[in-house]
Image (cartoon, rainbow, N blue to C red):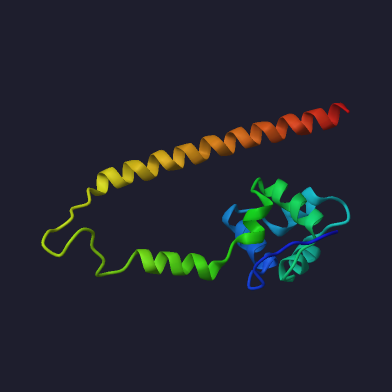
Length: 139
């Protein structure tokens, strides 16, 4: 049960909870997937831990179908800083002599295409996971 976290400000349990909630997975469901030794209360305690054992983190990440590194490295404060420094009320592109017009339809289309690509990657990962599970079941 080794552990590696490079940033001491990162709270892996809190990150686990955020990812679990984003994916609409209940604590009970996660406990069920982890096995008989787990229950909702144990998941709640796990989400309170600042550092999670690597083997457990890997299992949880596999169940949530996300990389374990996402849980290990997600820093909410850095994400907020990036967003706040990127999107400001008075922000503009280009120089002060012209106005930049952003077409919202183009941006919507780009976001839609990105969402489709993400969905396709998620489906591919699900299919790979199902294949691994089928191979495990067959022995």
